[in-house]
Image (cartoon, rainbow, N blue to C red; front, side, top):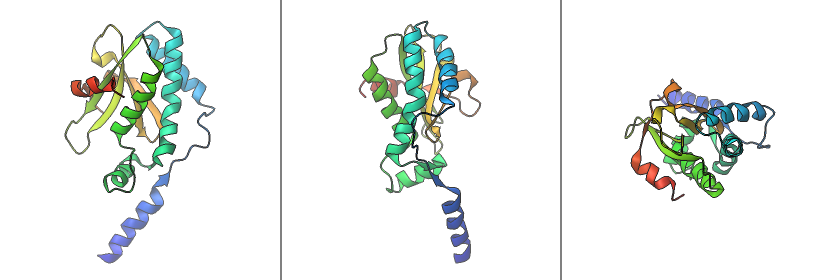
Length: 179
Protein backbone atom coordinates (compact mmCIF):
# COMPACT_ATOMS: atom_id res chain seq x y z
CA UNK A 1 0.00 0.00 0.00
CA UNK A 2 2.80 2.40 0.89
CA UNK A 3 4.61 1.57 -2.35
CA UNK A 4 1.44 2.33 -4.33
CA UNK A 5 1.09 5.71 -2.60
CA UNK A 6 4.71 6.57 -3.45
CA UNK A 7 4.13 5.62 -7.09
CA UNK A 8 0.97 7.75 -7.28
CA UNK A 9 2.66 10.77 -5.66
CA UNK A 10 5.67 10.38 -7.97
CA UNK A 11 3.35 10.26 -10.98
CA UNK A 12 1.66 13.49 -9.90
CA UNK A 13 4.99 15.19 -9.29
CA UNK A 14 6.26 14.19 -12.73
CA UNK A 15 3.04 14.79 -14.66
CA UNK A 16 2.17 18.16 -13.16
CA UNK A 17 4.16 21.12 -14.25
CA UNK A 18 4.28 24.75 -13.39
CA UNK A 19 2.96 27.23 -15.90
CA UNK A 20 5.12 30.33 -16.15
CA UNK A 21 4.88 32.74 -19.00
CA UNK A 22 8.09 34.70 -19.56
CA UNK A 23 6.36 36.59 -22.30
CA UNK A 24 2.70 37.48 -22.21
CA UNK A 25 2.62 37.62 -26.01
CA UNK A 26 3.27 34.61 -28.21
CA UNK A 27 3.78 34.37 -31.95
CA UNK A 28 0.45 32.54 -32.28
CA UNK A 29 -1.44 35.38 -30.58
CA UNK A 30 -2.07 37.40 -33.72
CA UNK A 31 -4.03 34.56 -35.30
CA UNK A 32 -5.91 33.73 -32.10
CA UNK A 33 -6.78 37.38 -31.45
CA UNK A 34 -8.09 37.73 -35.01
CA UNK A 35 -10.22 34.59 -34.68
CA UNK A 36 -11.70 35.82 -31.41
CA UNK A 37 -12.22 39.28 -32.90
CA UNK A 38 -14.20 37.67 -35.75
CA UNK A 39 -16.38 35.83 -33.21
CA UNK A 40 -16.94 39.06 -31.28
CA UNK A 41 -17.88 40.90 -34.44
CA UNK A 42 -20.83 38.51 -34.79
CA UNK A 43 -22.11 40.13 -31.57
CA UNK A 44 -21.28 43.78 -32.29
CA UNK A 45 -19.93 45.66 -35.27
CA UNK A 46 -17.65 47.85 -33.12
CA UNK A 47 -14.27 46.82 -34.55
CA UNK A 48 -12.22 48.81 -32.03
CA UNK A 49 -13.90 47.27 -29.01
CA UNK A 50 -13.88 43.79 -30.54
CA UNK A 51 -10.15 44.12 -31.17
CA UNK A 52 -9.42 45.45 -27.68
CA UNK A 53 -11.51 42.77 -25.97
CA UNK A 54 -9.95 40.00 -28.08
CA UNK A 55 -6.43 41.16 -27.23
CA UNK A 56 -7.22 41.43 -23.53
CA UNK A 57 -8.97 38.05 -23.43
CA UNK A 58 -6.10 36.22 -25.12
CA UNK A 59 -3.24 37.75 -23.11
CA UNK A 60 -4.66 38.50 -19.65
CA UNK A 61 -5.18 34.84 -18.58
CA UNK A 62 -1.38 34.48 -18.82
CA UNK A 63 -0.94 37.36 -16.38
CA UNK A 64 -3.28 35.52 -14.04
CA UNK A 65 -1.47 32.20 -14.56
CA UNK A 66 1.74 33.85 -13.38
CA UNK A 67 -0.01 35.59 -10.49
CA UNK A 68 -1.66 32.34 -9.37
CA UNK A 69 1.59 30.33 -9.82
CA UNK A 70 -0.53 28.02 -11.90
CA UNK A 71 0.32 24.36 -12.38
CA UNK A 72 -1.10 21.95 -14.92
CA UNK A 73 -3.39 20.19 -15.27
CA UNK A 74 -5.93 22.70 -13.95
CA UNK A 75 -7.62 20.03 -11.84
CA UNK A 76 -4.37 19.55 -9.92
CA UNK A 77 -4.13 23.30 -9.38
CA UNK A 78 -7.68 23.13 -7.98
CA UNK A 79 -6.41 20.53 -5.50
CA UNK A 80 -3.61 22.90 -4.45
CA UNK A 81 -6.09 25.75 -3.91
CA UNK A 82 -8.61 23.59 -2.08
CA UNK A 83 -5.89 22.19 0.19
CA UNK A 84 -4.60 25.68 1.03
CA UNK A 85 -1.33 25.46 -0.91
CA UNK A 86 -2.36 28.17 -3.39
CA UNK A 87 -4.61 31.17 -2.82
CA UNK A 88 -6.28 31.49 -6.20
CA UNK A 89 -6.61 29.85 -9.60
CA UNK A 90 -9.98 28.13 -9.63
CA UNK A 91 -12.17 28.73 -12.68
CA UNK A 92 -14.33 31.27 -10.87
CA UNK A 93 -11.19 33.20 -9.86
CA UNK A 94 -10.40 33.55 -13.57
CA UNK A 95 -13.96 34.83 -14.13
CA UNK A 96 -13.65 37.40 -11.34
CA UNK A 97 -10.18 38.63 -12.26
CA UNK A 98 -10.69 38.75 -16.03
CA UNK A 99 -14.01 40.53 -15.50
CA UNK A 100 -12.29 43.07 -13.23
CA UNK A 101 -9.89 43.86 -16.08
CA UNK A 102 -12.78 44.01 -18.57
CA UNK A 103 -14.68 46.40 -16.30
CA UNK A 104 -11.68 48.73 -16.17
CA UNK A 105 -11.99 49.17 -19.95
CA UNK A 106 -15.66 50.22 -19.91
CA UNK A 107 -16.83 48.40 -23.05
CA UNK A 108 -20.04 49.86 -24.48
CA UNK A 109 -20.81 47.33 -27.24
CA UNK A 110 -20.85 44.15 -25.18
CA UNK A 111 -22.53 42.80 -22.10
CA UNK A 112 -21.11 40.01 -19.97
CA UNK A 113 -22.82 37.06 -18.35
CA UNK A 114 -21.59 34.44 -15.90
CA UNK A 115 -21.83 30.99 -17.48
CA UNK A 116 -21.90 27.86 -15.34
CA UNK A 117 -21.90 24.17 -16.19
CA UNK A 118 -22.60 21.36 -13.73
CA UNK A 119 -23.56 23.84 -11.03
CA UNK A 120 -23.12 22.60 -7.44
CA UNK A 121 -21.36 19.44 -8.60
CA UNK A 122 -17.75 18.41 -8.14
CA UNK A 123 -16.98 19.26 -11.79
CA UNK A 124 -18.70 22.68 -11.78
CA UNK A 125 -17.12 25.06 -14.28
CA UNK A 126 -17.50 28.84 -14.62
CA UNK A 127 -16.77 31.17 -17.53
CA UNK A 128 -17.49 34.65 -18.83
CA UNK A 129 -19.92 34.77 -21.74
CA UNK A 130 -19.75 37.81 -23.99
CA UNK A 131 -23.10 38.96 -25.34
CA UNK A 132 -24.24 41.80 -27.56
CA UNK A 133 -25.52 44.82 -25.64
CA UNK A 134 -29.08 44.15 -26.80
CA UNK A 135 -29.25 40.69 -25.22
CA UNK A 136 -29.81 37.90 -27.74
CA UNK A 137 -29.87 34.18 -27.04
CA UNK A 138 -27.30 33.02 -24.44
CA UNK A 139 -26.29 30.08 -26.65
CA UNK A 140 -24.96 32.57 -29.25
CA UNK A 141 -22.67 34.24 -26.72
CA UNK A 142 -18.89 33.75 -26.82
CA UNK A 143 -17.21 31.86 -23.96
CA UNK A 144 -14.02 33.31 -22.47
CA UNK A 145 -12.34 30.56 -20.46
CA UNK A 146 -8.86 31.17 -19.06
CA UNK A 147 -8.89 28.17 -16.69
CA UNK A 148 -9.52 25.20 -19.02
CA UNK A 149 -6.14 25.35 -20.76
CA UNK A 150 -4.12 26.69 -17.80
CA UNK A 151 -3.82 30.32 -18.81
CA UNK A 152 -4.29 29.86 -22.54
CA UNK A 153 -7.66 31.28 -23.51
CA UNK A 154 -10.30 28.87 -24.75
CA UNK A 155 -13.17 30.50 -26.62
CA UNK A 156 -16.15 29.36 -28.64
CA UNK A 157 -19.83 30.04 -29.00
CA UNK A 158 -21.72 28.62 -26.03
CA UNK A 159 -23.67 26.31 -28.32
CA UNK A 160 -20.45 24.99 -29.92
CA UNK A 161 -18.67 23.93 -26.73
CA UNK A 162 -18.41 20.15 -26.88
CA UNK A 163 -17.05 19.73 -23.34
CA UNK A 164 -19.52 21.75 -21.24
CA UNK A 165 -23.17 22.79 -21.43
CA UNK A 166 -23.27 26.28 -19.98
CA UNK A 167 -26.29 28.16 -18.70
CA UNK A 168 -26.39 31.66 -17.31
CA UNK A 169 -25.95 31.95 -13.56
CA UNK A 170 -28.06 35.07 -12.99
CA UNK A 171 -26.74 35.77 -9.48
CA UNK A 172 -23.19 35.62 -10.83
CA UNK A 173 -24.06 37.91 -13.73
CA UNK A 174 -25.26 40.55 -11.23
CA UNK A 175 -21.93 40.29 -9.41
CA UNK A 176 -19.84 40.79 -12.58
CA UNK A 177 -20.46 44.52 -12.50
CA UNK A 178 -18.95 44.69 -9.00
CA UNK A 179 -15.50 43.41 -9.97
